[in-house]
Amino acid sequence: MKKIIYILTISITFLSCNNQPNKVEEENFAEKETQTNKFDNSKYYTQQDTILIATEIGDTLKYAKIDFNNIVDKHTEFFEDYPKNPDQAYFNDMDKEEFNCEVGQDVYYVLYAYFLKQRNGVEEFAQQRQKLINIYSNINSLFGHFQYGGTYFGHQSSRILGYAEYSIYLLPKSKDDISKTYDITKQKDFYIKSLRQLIEDESKIDFETLGQEKIARNKKLKAIVGELNKLITDNFYLRRAQEFQYGHYEYY
Image 1 (cartoon, rainbow, N blue to C red):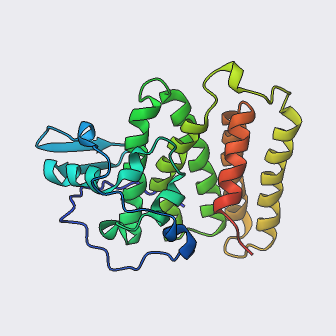
Image 2: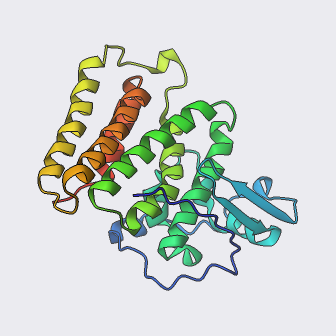
């Protein structure tokens, strides 16, 4: 599956979503209070007539000043002291009319990443952020190949920004924050081997490609896993890779 990259040039008035949002448990809604006007988020306003939000994957969001500041006012969940993960933030948000379709949800995750990035540190964790994006993108690509593509994987390419930024929030910021100091070599080997075994197992039931085409396909898939092997350098990245895979890619 070719990597899907597209530029999102969006204002609030442009976004119109016809799809209904995914349902979530009602108890999550019951716990959420109406917070509009409860907090003064004016420090997050832009003073520019137009703001461009460029991402690490080549997408760009474009907002007029009034639209951007309206988002700041409406979506206080972006500024909570203890941020929820992007899935919880999105599905618990009762005031996301402009983000109700699939593309709208993509935009929400990009905005989530943008605002949390300001708090995490844009430059301070740039290297770790890019590594996480690369890990998640490779996992997304691997399973996208298994399924021969699909819109889910295209949407995930944008939402990965939100998942990666939340992972930066969870990243141990000092050695004192790290309790698991043991060698993860064997655990990592088991994980990488499980992905390689998955390639073999998927190949056995894959009749879409045959002969040399299948050989080339499997070589490409193994290269993706090889890249993951290089990117996963410690316990934190191993755990985040496992959580991302097992939480978002489950097929029967």
